[in-house]
Amino acid sequence: MAQIAILERKCDGCGTCAQACPFGAIDMEAGKPQLNAACRVCGLCVKACPKGAVVRLETKVQSIDKSLWRDILVFAECEGGRLHPVGLELIGKALELAQPVAYRVKALLMGHGVEPLAQELRHYGVSEIAVYDDPALSYFRADAYAACAEDYIRAARPSVVLVGATSLGRSLAPRLATRFHTGLTADCTRLEMRPSTDLVQIRPAFGGNIMAQIVTLNTRPQFATVRYKVMDAPVRREEAQGEIVLRQTPALRSPVTHVRTERIPAAASISDAEILVVGGRGLQKEADLDLVRELAKALGGDWAVSRPLVEKGWATNARQIGLSGRTVKPRLIITCGVSGAIQFTACMNASEHIVAINSDPQAPIFNVAHVAIVGDLYEVLPGLLRRLRGGEEALA
Image 1 (cartoon, rainbow, N blue to C red):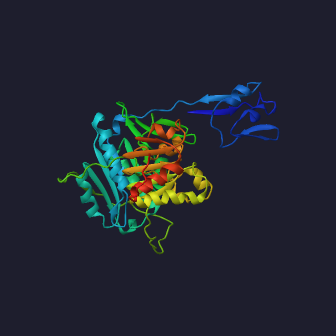
Image 2 (cartoon, one colour):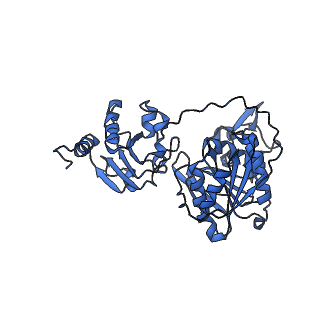
Image 3 (cartoon, rainbow, N blue to C red):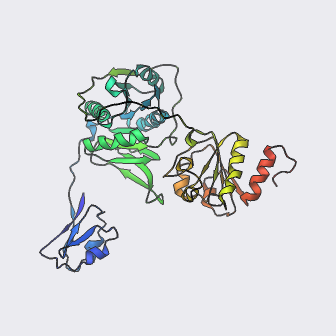
């Protein structure tokens, strides 16, 4: 592990290092440079210092015996008496990752009255389902769930722990990674397993401009959260297999007190849509979204937008596809005037059929499209609508 240090005996307080830092990580206090939490250990300050007073220190990290950590654990999230689909998707991916290294796949289930859900998990190929069933777990408290998950992870010692990138999972996973002093990669879009049992965790980085490959080399477990609708769930098997292990709930000492539960009415999500029509930057004015909505309605689907339209205030974040919005995987998606930046395509390129409409033949969206329509969306969309409505005029 690297860190930056300042040798006070050599430093004359010239401030060159502070000027060279692109992250604002060096503050000048009383004429002396002081590092703050923004430091990325890039080393530019080391190169800039004329006195050699700024140095980069390398600390050797002690490796663990990876053979003591085996198998893949999937957190099976449940709410309202049903399993969240992201848990099944993670089981499907875990089964694929486990094959080359001869690992087993296990599931962790927490809640109250969850035995029927544990029985259902037996139909998806897991070898063991660890269950913490307690009235204190009937609603989510991060500290209580983390205590139970930690208890099982210390007992089972899995090499990999996969958690859905839901609001619950994003709260739970960092707490667990901190307790085990290991790394966590959030919002992964791909996962690969090396023969060494190191998990390659792939996710967009730097605003989605690159796809980063992150590996936890020296610690275990390897934690990763994965977005909903990114992986494929396994086919449900008729035969039930896998052992259900009822675990004793550890002592839960929490300062959080449950007062009442209020259910938020379920709302339709673009992540669940089978057909989507998406409007992008190519739309000239807000009223033109009506074309997108009309086509979606004619196809029996839903509509969505790319980030520029949310920034203009034409739609809410709930309608946005992208890293800062939703991940979708419909049977059919039609993009209208969407350029296809990686931040967008990374969250929709697993769709079964992708139709892209754009006037620019070099638009990046055509790199992932199955059907590319180069043309003015203001001519193409009305033509599609006429066809769907049975009009005489057809799209040329």
